[in-house]
Picture 1 (cartoon, rainbow, N blue to C red):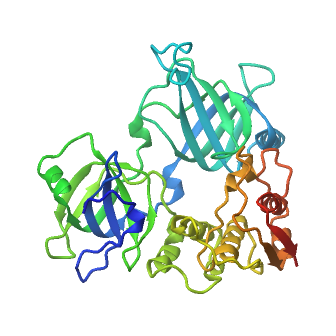
Picture 2 (cartoon, rainbow, N blue to C red):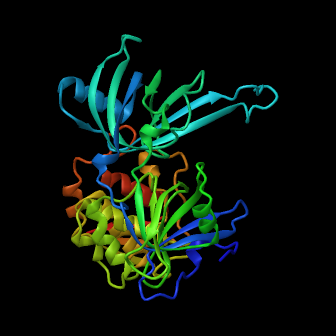
Picture 3 (cartoon, rainbow, N blue to C red):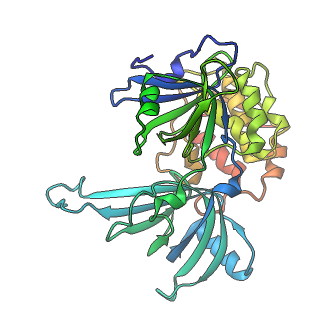
Amino acid sequence: MAEAVEAEDLRWSWGRALPLKYLLVHEEWDGELTVWARCAEADGLFVDPARRRKRVTVVGCAPTGRLLKAVRRALDRPGEEIDLGELGVVSDFPVPGVDPETDPYGAFQDDQWYFERPVLVGCRPSALGESLVDLVVEAEIDGPAWRAEPADTEWGLYNGCGGGWLGECHRVEGLYGDPRSQVPPPMVLRGCEPGEPLLRRLVRPRADGDRVRLLAVDRSGRVMRHYEPMPLEVRASRPSALGGTLVDLWLAEGPALRPVPQARPVWDAWFEGPPAEPGGWAAYDSEGRAEWAAFAAARWRPGHSSGPDPVRRLDGRYVTDAPGLRCALGEAVAGPGGHFAQCWHVLRGCPCGGDPVPEPFTLVWHDSAVARDALAGHTVDTAGETPYVDAVLGMLTRAGITVDLR
């Protein structure tokens, strides 16, 4: 199938008794989609974070805000691991041969990395200056690793993806270098029905690997999650135990960031279709709730709302963590499995400031004290000073929503 439409707007099927769960899709420059494979299972989709964690050293760092507070705690408590919340790293460098006076926009380039679950595991005074420190950070890191570090690079640290400024440093050791050391773990797709492009690659393998996206569909064939393009390098293919003409494919690597094993029950629930009743997220732990919120965000389309009701009600009884608040707020605004479509990065200092809601309303937040107590020590703002619930209330107010705490 090859149509210039969004994959999420289609219903996918394959006419077999086995449920279809995954697709490998190649997207052309003009948006045309080509299915390379339909698959029944994906072994290795759920990965223990410990398998993909990496240590890097932030050299000659001048931290500010939340990062400065974390550094001070680390210096006061040697040997203790300090949770950093979120961290983004950007390197800016000049493009060789391009004159900034004649082409100011094309003369510079940047690479960006997102650190998930970052932990500060070491901190020491830097040899590069009295006021500077060297930081050893461990995290799951998503970003480029395919080339050597460019010359004349300038580094910046941010409060997560799209967040505010957290400081600068001389360099970050371990981000650039041998890409083989940072390849995501392999994955096996079982019970696959190859399309024509994949059949040609299986007959005449290529080492460079075409870039494809992995799509996960629910029982009705609607896309429920998708991942960033990844290189398709098939290491082996064999007839599948699932029978027929299906094959199993051993891929050299899968998506860079994948759900943790604890999230599998959430995937199983959403495979049966979007939730019809409220509160389905409440039974899960924090990681499961974060995965629930990710499903809700992937499902959202412009115009999704529970209607023009001027009063929406948030059930706060189970809001005991930040992902739970996102789930409850999305549900209040857009119904079961709903998503509150604001830029949540504004909590971390994103300069966009957020957008006003199309139809302002009053949000009645029942049992708001539950979240206030559970998140009393949780902050995500750049300065690390505003309690999480207060930051969310500020975001809602800027969006034009009146909040009634009860």
